[in-house]
Image (cartoon, rainbow, N blue to C red; front, side):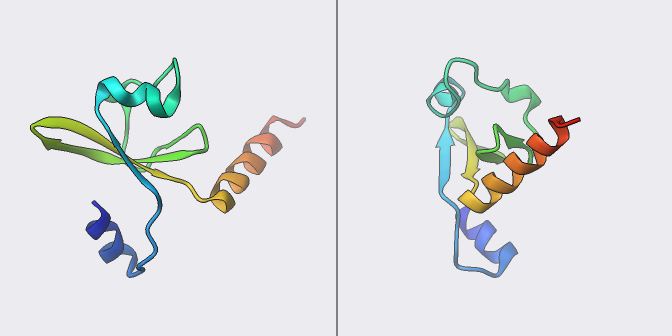
Length: 85
């Protein structure tokens, strides 16, 4: 996945990547992790992680990219602006 991201973006900067099994989702998302059946590629979860996809290597691993602080701030600003009357 890291090589695919670098090729698609033509950039050698890669976000922090996390690969977890379904049982390990709580490590990233706490006591209320997302349902794996509902995850869609490109979806942003909790303004912190972008779901990249699933990879099967004996077991299925779900890949996430941690958003950089600028992306997180932008999403937080947009969500707080949407809440204001």
